[in-house]
Length: 140
Image 1 (cartoon, helix red, strand yellow):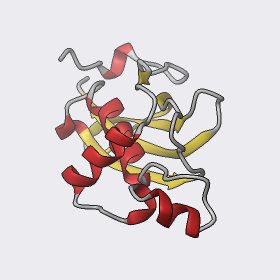
Image 2: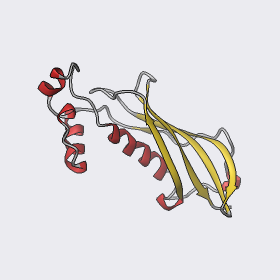
Image 3: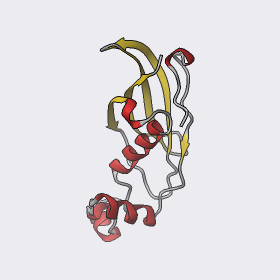
């Protein structure tokens, strides 16, 4: 991985987008197995319908993991100083998640050169499902 350098980035720069395949039942089953989150709202259509949902939907933390992939595809994990996210919508079956980021601030803290990145995960219709921010330390 070739990590960006502090002097080579500027406010407004965008991270390379992470475009994922549409969420399907296999995605949800595999994530449930990997995460140990077997909440029936995500894997049992009968349960979902009893909960007044048209069908099962993605785990919020699946989209959070996608945002983690966006960030660690841009900088090494050890460079991350903080990540905060807020869930803003449900990712339904068939939604195609796209994770994006934009540098919104450059600053120094604790002797490090850092950037703050606004991050989000949206579907193919541009509807935000998660929004947040991350801080990463970059080499000078």
